[in-house]
Image (cartoon, rainbow, N blue to C red; front, side, top):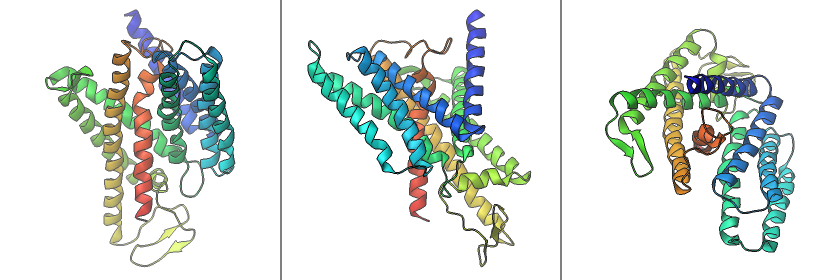
Length: 319
């Protein structure tokens, strides 16, 4: 009972913190998520038994946090590519300093260090390119929905898997996960995603959906006339017979967004399970009472962020 209360309280604080960080202000998003990135990197090094000195672990974690901030500033067009020079120098210094550490497998250590940066800091930093739309302004809606889809998938997979799960999804890595749970999580996420889309589209909250479209479709100022109807300023008003077709297309893209999130989240969860199994760890850490470590909570997002970013970039190519 005590563990259930602890788990519930931690989960509530975790969700509330993320929602506030994403929705309240871009600066809060940058601060909170950069701290999370640093903690993810530090925990990864502890989990994989990285044998670098304490200052190297700390600087590696600080470097991961810096990469998130640098990517935030670059994605928001606050600065140019030179913002990444300090990060490159930091990596060079830490890697070079490893030459002076004795009695360690430096090749393995270097691999762990670089992979921690790529897996944790690199994957998480791509959230910035999702949060800034083609207009160059901060857009909290896609990142918020990304996490909501992850949570919906986790809930659906757990409930359905616990109820009727029999066929193991990946028994070698995660014996408890089932195909029934996977399809259950996917079904719950897609259905609720469609309901959210319908609700927003019919309750004069279409700016939220437009915020999603702005991630990969540049919006012109003024009015666009012709077969596509009329779009003016921030309005999402499409005239005449094109309304149904346009809404249908946006719904399809929205559902694809949800499906990509579920599939990538599943692989992210499995990959983190593989890391823990490799190092004989039940949890990735103890930072979140009742939930394990940071990686246990953000493993899905580390795979979802690159997948969604790639999805948006591919859509831009067809624009």
